[in-house]
Image (cartoon, rainbow, N blue to C red):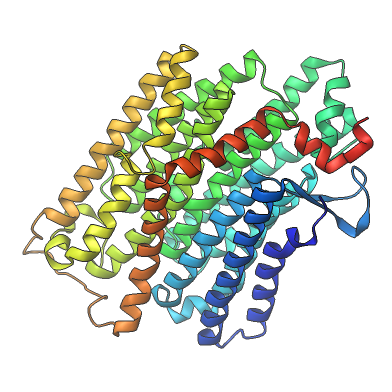
Length: 503
């Protein structure tokens, strides 16, 4: 079904950014515009999700050029679910940014660049053209590089260089893969590619091409051995920026893997084995890296790497149950990881540091805030019946069916390490008495009440969303069941894009 509303989430972010550019020096106006634009974007995303859930896949041919010759935008349940989750995270980060960032950073153009980044994310999720996906990836990279260097501190610039270097390398592999793919099929439309790739006789060339995409998406997702840029850079920018990066940017790579390896490169035995090896090592390196970290944001960065391996393993098994687990974990991870970095920013405001050795006593000083944070931490660990528990059930179930015992061992190790490091963090940050020799720099206490509310509110809202996913798991399972069915059998996606051209 053709529907022009597919572009609404992209346009809301675009126009919000453009209007903010006209208010460059008026930071208060930019804050109102950011929160208002994010709220409108959230309502638009929810409406689009409802339409797709009720009516099925929606499409839009840009400039009225029929597929596969023109650029097509496609809203299936996977893409609109991610658009909705991105909009929720965007709304929360916008509120937090309005009080959690210094005016100096706002004057550097934080809010317009932030909304250009969200626009790029929405575009990447909704495009049905492989080259257009690359274009939106570049929008994301450019915007994120500006956000990472905002303020110009030495640590930020050092982290940004590593981030930019690896992402440029990822773009080179991605673009090379697109060039080869176009050369052997003559198309860039993903639905059309799904049909044309089957007619290519040189299967070895297809396998080599798929490796370019694995490397490109693997760097963006921070999988082993291409992950080291993430923990070296995500701890350097402001917490609001780190929350956006930690919750959303690596997940674009996972989405791209799900899309291309269900539509274009259906995984063969070699690809599945390669992805499974990558998943296992990603889980283990992320888990062992988190064990030795005392800085909260560095610890969270390694947990991002660890849990990316959970999702890659689900893609590697490539069955309906495994994809349900991967997609469910993707939904859970976006909300939880975004909130974890917001929590790190709040702790920084409360104590002036994120070094666990210098922290303590938060539960006695702020019991209500600590209980809200506990919900997020328990969800991250996967305590039943919270959101992190249910996707693991599907992943373990399918891993046993396929006799993937090494992956099962990696899942167990990753889960127990997550439990250990979060329990250690809770003990050090919340229960332990603060050291008398450490001078506490409490930036939160002197804030006006409305600023305190605006700093805690997004954490509470994200915690409620996470709690909803865990306690209403039946509804999420129903959504992931539909998504995994569409991924395993993309005929509905192809028919929606190409219509009768498949006959």
